[in-house]
Structures are given as C-alpha cells and as structure tokens.
Image 1 (tube, one colour):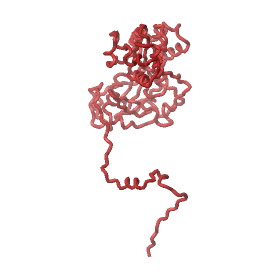
Image 2 (cartoon, one colour):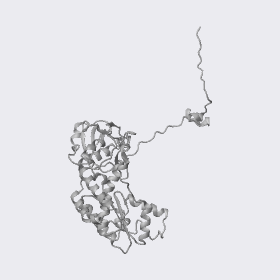
Image 3 (cartoon, rainbow, N blue to C red):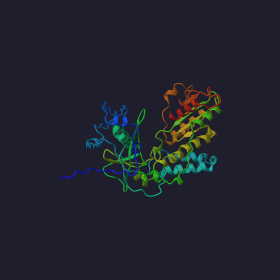
Image 4 (spheres, rainbow, N blue to C red):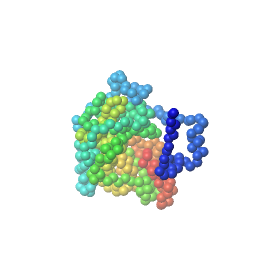
Length: 388
C-alpha cells in the first residue's frame, strides 16, 4: 500500500511579506505574477559619431573578440620606456625656478624641487606594500564604445604615454586593471579604474601620509575675488591640455598600471586619471607654474584661483595685471612644453581685446549684477568657468 507523504514546514517566528521584501498590498504582487502587458526592453545607448584620431585603424563589428593580424599590423606599437618620458622641457623649467627661487617661500621651493624630481625620475604612487598581480574585466561600457576606446588606446600609444600592444604580460606581477568608457559631449573619456579589486587596489594601498594636501579653489571663492575686482573686471582662464599625461611614473611602478584590450596587454607609463596620488603629483607642477608667473608679475596668487590644470586670473578694470599674467603664463607653458587648450570660441567672439582671445571683460560673470553679494546664479556661473 503506497504511503502518501505531505511536506510540512515549520516557522520559528511569524514572517510577513515585508520580511521577504514584498509590498503588503497583495494585489500589487499578484499583478507582477500575472503580468500580461507588453514588456519593454531597455534600449542600448546611442553611440554618437565622434572624430577619430587614428582613422587608419579598422573598425570592428564586435569588440569582444580578437582581431586578426591584419588589424594589428596597422596598429601602432610603443615599447616599454628605458627612462621616464615627459614632453616637459625640464632644463627650461629648472632654469625658470632658479630665476625666482630667492623670492619663493620654503614650501614653494620644496614643491618646485619635488616637481622637477618627479619629471626626471617619475612621480611615485606611494604604495604601502608590494601589490600582487591581478586580472580585472573591463566595464561593459568599453564594448558599447569599442571603436572610440580602440581609437583612444591607439592615440595614447602614438603619443608614447602607453606601451604596447603585447601578446602576454610584459612585466612580472603585471596588474590588469579594468577600463571604463565615459561618454561626453565631444569625446569618450577612457578611464582606468585603479580602485579594483576591492581591498587590493592601487588606491587602497596608498600611504596617505606621503601625499601633499591639495587646495583647490571653489566657485564661491572665485565669486569673492570677482566681487572684490568690481564692475568691468578683467578675467582670463588657462587650461593645461592632457594634464596628467605630462608626468611619468617610476619605471618600477609601470607594472601597476596595466590593462587589457582586444586580447592584448598595454601599460600606461604616465599618471593615471582616477589614481589618488595623481592629483597631488600633478598639482605640484600646476602650482609651480602659477608661482613662477605670480612672482614675475609681482601678483598675489589669490587673484589667480586654480583647480589642478585650470587657472583663472581676475583683476580690476583699470589694471593691466590680467593681460600681463596671461601672456607670461602662456609664454612659460610654451617654453617648457606644456600645451594649453584652444581658446573658447563661445567667449572669444565677445572679447573686446584681440591679444590672445583668452581675455574676457565682464561677460561670463557679469560683475554689474553681483551687487557686492553672492547669489546662487553667480555661483553657478563661476562653476561654469571650470568647465570651459
């Protein structure tokens, strides 16, 4: 005679739907279970065509697979560096520092010397311990924007700031960090995520005691300087191009900055956008350039607020200091090999002076409407300045 067994469930405590993460309204749960409407699948993000810097690189139909040798034959190659690489003319920078060193404070002189050393030998990532090798997968966004990612990597290799491609890891204990593609208005920014793997990443392993504290100007602090300058104040803004890429890392730390793309290995040899030490390492260079120009113009650094690679100069209408500072800053960057971003076309047409196109007279921040006080609107306008 067959035995009919019935499962019996016991609960120690009374459980509710809320304990399982369900809403108390059973009709809503039933609607999910018996859903009969049309299911709308999320659409893939639209990839806006952007100009390519390496048009000779073949476009692939799928960036998750390995391309053939014909593809790689057209791809540039850059070997691992024998010495740290920088486009900065170190001798000229050192010459300009020495010319004003007697007028520098101890902190300014120390920062300038450290900056020159970093350019010669590489700026350290200040690791607490020797990190092991790792392998992290790239973000899905890199495959969505695969053509742009490939174009960026090829351009970096051409510029000499990335070594590769290599069929196998080029260094012992090579770390393969994940790439992330961020779609912006005019380009796709490629970022190496050095905050993974969790608890074993480059950023997790930084010795915070060795990092110089970075002071950056806020939109509000810029507003104060503009209010003090008064009606019709002169304003200019300089933006260093490819800022982090002018500063190398030590040869011994290149293994920490690897990545993999299209089944090939690459290594970034310069400061990484997204690495915590890169901020203070580059800030030393930007601050030193500002200090040199301020001393040459006998100007207060407070009138030239900074945010890393961006420097703004503000002065009253009856002063020529803004013009002098901008010309000397532009000239110094040219002499030491630092490229500045092109003039902003939006404001160049509205400028009343033809000197360099970098000068603005009460256009982006109308001091006539500030009325000696700060408003939400004026602060937002100052925030836009850093975005130009």
